Image 1 (tube, rainbow, N blue to C red):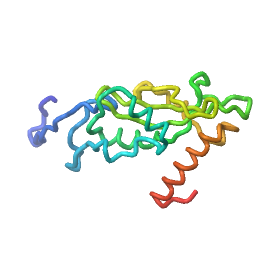
Image 2: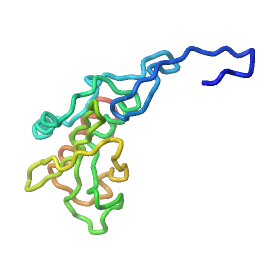
Image 3: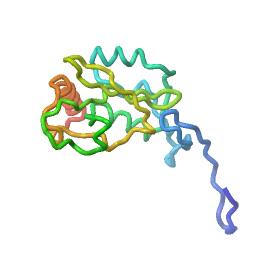
Length: 175
């Protein structure tokens, strides 16, 4: 930071920076309000309550991050339970409706080496971890919603509906 050319301005206090393990950005430790720019990972909703998802989370490598910046804390919670298009669609819904290839973000795990997004699909009637993406390289154009997909596997729909109902109950929002 350079010195001001104006003699009537005082230099404010410098705020320490830290590297958020989720996004990898150097962020200020404090917000302009004086509050900490961090959220404890333990207070975040990071996975859907499903035994198969819990099993995949337990097997995921990496040391869990203790805290993430506020922006990542909000972002990771918003991704959990989101419907996902297959990677080959490049963000465009397929023209043939009724494909059961929609997946769901079952868990988002902030790790010391970045955030892992665990994507699940239904294969032969079973919920299976099919992809693990890094938050920093994830293509947001893969996010989708039920109206753009046509049919989807009943298990994915049940998880999605249940998650929405839980969010609505928690935050008092109607459908």
